Image (tube, rainbow over all chains, first blue to last red; front, top):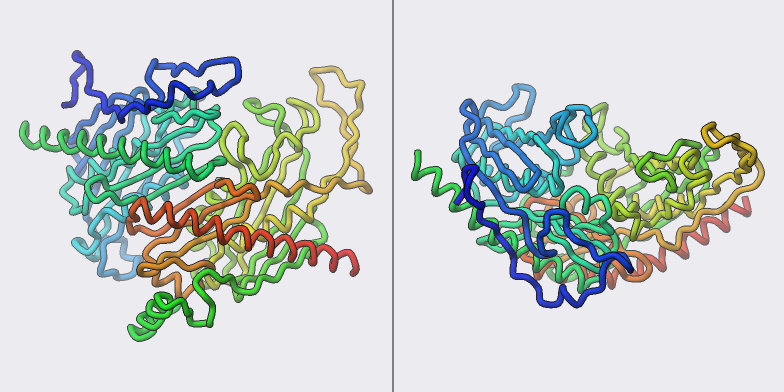
Length: 254
Length: 287
């Protein structure tokens, strides 16, 4: 499933919607052509690999186009002595960017907002009772930010958790959709994200068909939300299948 | 955090299932909302909102600033929420940081719209004074004084009321400024322009307890929730933002149902808030 340099990586492409061709262009006189030549409803090819970091209990590396993320899991390990006793496990998430991740060099800072969103997405999927009194640390590092960062971080983190052997109800797949004028564009790149009129991000458990997190910004009418959600759920189920095959392959080769 | 016995938990869940909550309300009824505006004299606009025992204060200050290079024709808005230790002892120092970040992020999402500015509750272009050089920086600060559930809705209402109360001073720009120098700007002390708040949305939080949704949950009811969805809806019935809280997963059909219920509830809430804000402004002018 995952390519190594040479051959074309498999794409997960949600079923192209037939009415996208009859939609008017987003700017009245310019037709939006995606910078990488994809269809509006086509996601970037996904490259996923587990076992990227030897020292960690589990780890995964994900590359979706230009967005490159590496996630390490440490744990379950002893909670800090200052924390109260708890008979369910604790999850500690941390998302940080490298200084060279963005086009303009930035501070290598931890992003508190993304960390808390990652936490909310994962806590619904992990069976916390299986590791009481301990903490599982999820450290995500965005090596290059090419758009759609948080969904890639979430998917990669759940793959890493599976690699670490943490018990979960299901893998977590995340996809986001950008609204550019009247068009819905799935898996936007950073250029499209800068022009977007609104965005919708879904995190779901594909086999259980449950949504663990949903974030909408911008102005949306209800039918548009329905359409965007169906698009995303379809893409999430395909991404779930790719994640599963990546895990199977890593166990069969090791 | 209030500790509940098993009997109390069953009582709350059973009551909600039968459309009769512990304080006698129906599932989709709000607590009485009290709005006072102009509570902080030094701010450009301020408001205090009480929903039952939840009390928040929002203040708006406008300062002159330089627009960012990526958006030279727009002003900037900064939203910060602070949870005061008077609300709960665990908020002392860094304890309230997590909740504050979550609330600030949710409010920023709801009020500032997409990156291109579409669907924003606050029109950022109206805050620009001189393109690329001078703009208004709006600092919206929320303070949580007392917590009894449903803080996000209360903060949304307080910010809406504070913005209605906000007066941006009139600015005279010295026209004879060379293009590469900072233009001289004269801020008037007397004349004010009222902010346009017709596009500011309201936030409705639907808390799912068992199989039913309630609106305006108290902190006891929130402790029993499986998940909560906060939806921000503007006057045209369009959704300006949505966040889901709580770890439990939700079926997509449940989310669609919540969205339609929220739209229905938001109309009443919007009308109620508008009348309360108008009454508060009238009272402020009298005093």
